[in-house]
Image 1: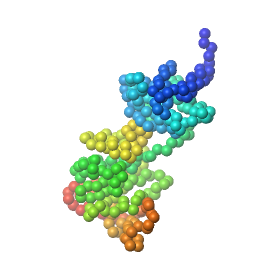
Image 2: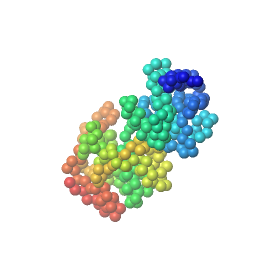
Image 3: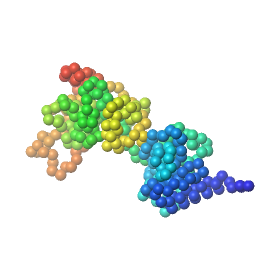
Image 4: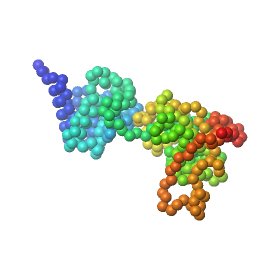
Length: 335
């Protein structure tokens, strides 16, 4: 007869997990009751089977140094899995506090009580959000709304036949001076998130001394997207709208540190009204070399970042701008 209490069973499992984490070699896999424990390089953690269906989720971080991933490549174990791993290069398992945190995170991941397993497998993103909320262990993640604005602009330009080569004409994540270099114009895409305390409505941040400089004789325009962090516009939906150039888009997203299936993939936004286009001409407020002695930026200045107010500047709704460009006409800009 087994008189062991649930608390004692939990403590025993916790000790076993910690022991395996501190003694396993890379490539080892151990079977526990209803989950696997494994080590791959500096990452160690648990894996639960997802059956015949793979879950497309990668680099979701429910806490610093922890990663939630869909995985079908455990050492010597075929199948589809959802894994929670810790990076041993940054999680010090010689520290009793870190050991306790590690064991609790792993066991909260694999537990089956109170519908945890079902909730985890049905919506791992929501599960990770809940873990972060309960633990208070906020992790820094780059919000994807500027990339969503760029992809919306890519799609609008492609639909109008103004952009025909996504790989070479869409330059945003490639660290080009401008986000778009079309044969007949350059475009810079700017997004403002409503309610962001670090950004002011009606302003854009110019991130280099060259960003508002024309490429040759081509006209340069800024497209301004006002956005809010709610709705149903996600990176996942934006990418799904692309056909043939989808792989090019995914490669560019990787350059911007956004990987298919990560936390940012399903973060929702929507666009507040019509995006506006501004022409960068002599009356547009900007910093240029001509404003400095000898037409050069000051010696020793390695980076120039400044904010520009768009209030009272002539603009054109994006739809009207694209229609004019498509028809070979000059867009009309009004205050």
